[in-house]
Image 1 (cartoon, rainbow, N blue to C red):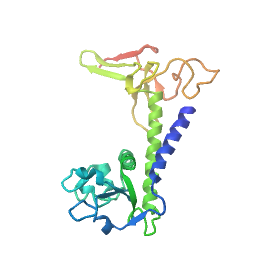
Image 2: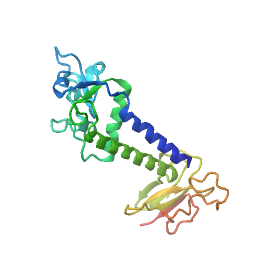
Image 3: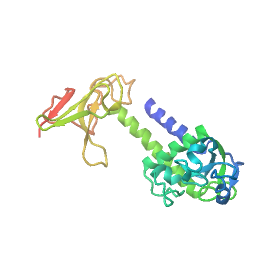
Length: 254
């Protein structure tokens, strides 16, 4: 239970970042005004916009100014390129429709980076903010999609803590070996577990995970009535044929 609450709080804190530092009275810039901040001689500075939020990146001029590796971001909102990596004119745009959850998380990470390292200037009037500085429907949709991606990420991490991936290796002579350790799947823990096939609802096939074989089921740390089998009785798990049910490794020939 506490792990789920922690994940929920993590999502809430991350989601709050979407709104941090941009109060209603923030400066409003037009696209034409923002274009004046590309760092060229005679221009007043170097700005860029992300999801309509404008940041002063003058201290990063070597990166964002003329000749810099990220100069294409200066003087515009190129949110999509932060996710896609497409630095062509077609990719340096603010349209975020159709982006995958992982790409939306990339935008969120960049927003965190700029919020932590650069000063916010205001809002760009256009796709994400109207002429009064109020969020548009496009911004609300983008933020909702990012928050959903954050929620999915937290849930996936929680599932990984419960069922860390197995270690595995294959050879033509010995077949496939799955095994569990206290670090398998990149999850450090105080138990190794036993290999099982995990089937997820709505997902074809299975993959090998390590399952706790003692103690209470996941999410019930204080339960006094349990069978001391960990998560072995989870209905989405299946034992590997030909392997001892409590073995920490399993070899499959063929």
